[in-house]
Amino acid sequence: MTDILRRGRLGATDDEVDGFLSSFGSDRRIFGADIDVGRAHVVTLAECGIVSEDDARAILGALDEVEEGGFDALDGTHEDVHPAIEAEVVERVGEDTGGRLHTARSRNDEVATCIRIALRDELLGGMRDVLALRSALVDRAEETDDYLVSGYTHLQRAQPTTIGHHLLSYDAALERDFGRLADAYGRVNESPLGSAAFAGTSFGIDRERTAELLGFDRPTRNSMDGVASRGFAVESVSSALNASVTLSRLCEDLVLWSSHEFGIVEFDDAYASTSSIMPQKKNPDTAELARGKTATVHGALTATVTNLKGLPSAYNRDLQEATGRIWEAFDAARSSCRVLAGVIDTAGFDRGSARATVEDGFVGATELADALVRETGIAFRTAHHVVASVAEQTDKPTADDVRDVFREVTGDALELDDERLENALEPRGCVESHDSYGAPGDEGLLDEARDALEADMD
Ligand code: ARG
Image (cartoon, rainbow, N blue to C red; front, side):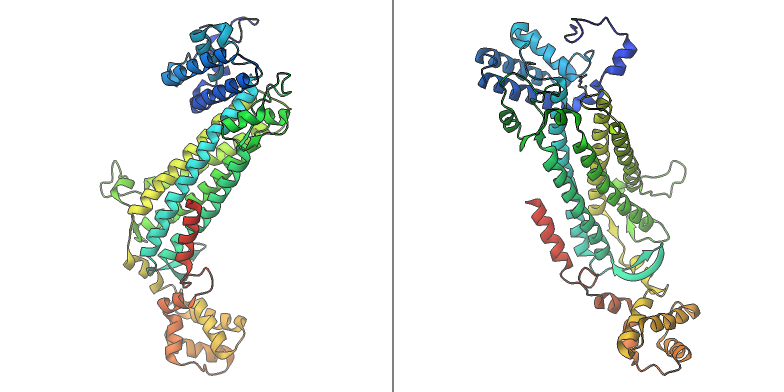
């Protein structure tokens, strides 16, 4: 190959150094973006009278051919994708024409622009993936709206809810995760192209025009900031991490629920694995891997931030190392999201096993205390004392158990008829009476989730 960068000065490197300097491994992600950046740049150079229309036309034709050949046709011994593409253009149309492509630009603004373009696609794709998962959650929530199940705090049975309410809790979290990706998109979508190395250029370029041609909202305001900042990457990866943490929590619940002890969910075969030695095993590996990939996303964020911390302005080669982390983060988060949408879509929820978690463990205790407050006028703290004393004796109290303890603790007879007392102890009545906004008995919750999902889909 002709090393278009090093031929003027600098001797040869050795293979290990070449490999060390190269970003080819992760440049595949920005190949298409770099072709588009080349196109927008050369069109604008021609419009501004900096290169001739004939030269621009020839370069555009060459870029089409390079695009058609694809990333794998490039000479991977170049330092990165940018000189590799430029060399292909020069080879096709000659240096006197092709050598004009890099007028008024640097790899510094070029790569920063390419990353933003490729990242826009990841953000939009990530938003689509989140919407698909939310849609699966909302559909299954509708179906399991009346499947009673215990909610857990500290992994101890706590209060009854429904599987539908539980699934909608993830939809609500993912709605915010979606919003974070959308917010990040707004700040990613600014064009550094034309910042050149960092100090702009004396050529009469039109940064507004290249920004417009590449679909950016606007050019970045300061040319040094344009090439030096990767805050947009931190923000994007952090949004991916927020979503991943939500997924990880969902995975943990699914893994627990799929255990023999809970038996609340069964994964479809397509989303389960088995054991090489224990033939009876059906393991929830997809959820475990999605939970595990959260670590990859977290690692990518940590690596990105650590890479940036303490860098001087403007461009430093360290930045190259951060770029691959962005793609790792989005690959891990997005594939997890897509696979989990399938898990949720196809999972079998077992009404009976779910119901069994509210049959004992006295999950109606809080509601009983609330009923005592409402019906007898005692203070909540006194009611808490009464019900805690009931719980001390049994985890499945009868109305009489409650009456006895009430008298022991307060010295008074409990003025509450059996029906109301039993209703408070019965999980179904308990869930239905919890109809405060956002609670499992709130009948508007599902519709609201659907409306929010549709609004985000628009
Ligand atoms: N491959 C480099 C990167 O990803 C491109 C920019 C190189 N710029 C430079 N001045 N060496 O950051």
